[in-house]
Length: 625
Image (cartoon, rainbow, N blue to C red):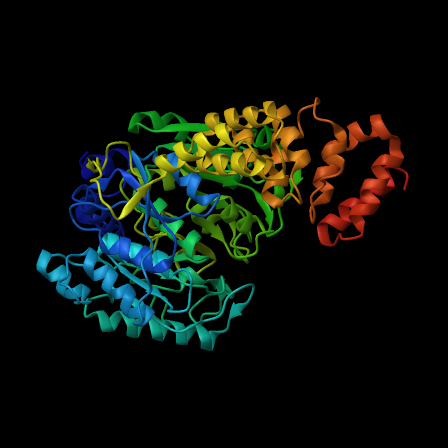
């Protein structure tokens, strides 16, 4: 598909000769990524690795002849990815011993090797020079930071310099102006060391990926008001002029690798929209406009759900399988408003497959590393690219969904499309929208790139996961037990075979060997298949259900009147008990009277604070307490 016709038909912008430099650079970076991906085949396999040394070794095997996803065997991310990617082969790499060299040297060597460098040569510049290529961006990480796994993958995949800097804080803090300037200086020094031009848009380096823990907010002397988003400072000069777009990845080794692999290897053809805004005033501009009718014209599918809380809950029974999600709401870091009702992060959809997200909402990314916040919950669900606010941004700080879609269909990278260009909007200056993920990731029309897929080659360096599946299936036949069925279900879930997992669950029941281990392994598949009775049966016998398992219980079963009320009463979720109790209070009133409701409220108040405490106290008065 040719880029220019899409630009002219979908974006309705000026002719290329009249485009601003920033707009030209937006098109150019997307076109360069698309061209690179068209020329780089995907090997139709997923390789699981047991440790970082093996991960680096596997990445080093990439080449211009083929690249493939490399993941740590960590749930639920591994099976989420498999269910979407659907590889022909799922392999395990044999463990590689760690090197005595520094982490930085090991990472640089892996990247250079993937780009065709000679043995022992860790110079990415030499490798790119041999291919006659320029970098697509730069990646910056820290040697002690676990997110360096994403840095290696993105540097190797795109041909980007990988640079190492010191720590600059993390968590729910704000980087002060002096620390922010120090960060900018260090990034500037790192980019200077690459030898590539980076000082303005349209040169060699127009994208920076920060793969390390950072505060989500900072103070910046050129901002009109502080604090602002950390990722909107990176890629700017001290005067606030943008010279690159930034993305930010953080988290564990397995989660960071997952975010990189999703960006690099997954198609994005299924869209999901949840609009809670009224169809009037400035809110209307941030609704869906003509998006629903536009998608089929570019070969994409879309689902629009009702913007009420009930609509969100019903859409999430069994989980969501969207590639790109758009949601707008009002609220704070610990709640979001649907039409007519307020809700907690506990009701954010469970993702069956990976997804990217644009969330028009205040404060969702104030502290994205905190799993009980709106942004933190989305990320814990498996979001791998996220546009959201770290502070009160004002509505028009966001690019409207219709404009965002036009840009995406024109070939803009996802995170680039979410930024206003200089002169378009007062919030094009350093402001409060954070961009998490790979800044080079595209969400184009169907068949825009048409990446070549090649078949995997046999190798003694791997074991086949399907052989493991066959072995454990044989074992449950000859030695049925809770442990063996749990091992079998773990593998069938990993390869995305939920129906087989369900069959194993039934077989374990028939042979009377079901226990806490097999129940726990069966639970996610039972949730996705929407087998409510089997799910409840399994849930009752697992020990100490974790947060995700409790969320699955409520998302799958709470709207079903056949669900025994006692299991919901025993599993009210903290710290957002008010929302769960509100949902089940009418049924509790019928079965246990007002005292039953008051008992739930009293118990929840022992650990309540903030909004949750206020709502519970109001409910207590309503029920005569």
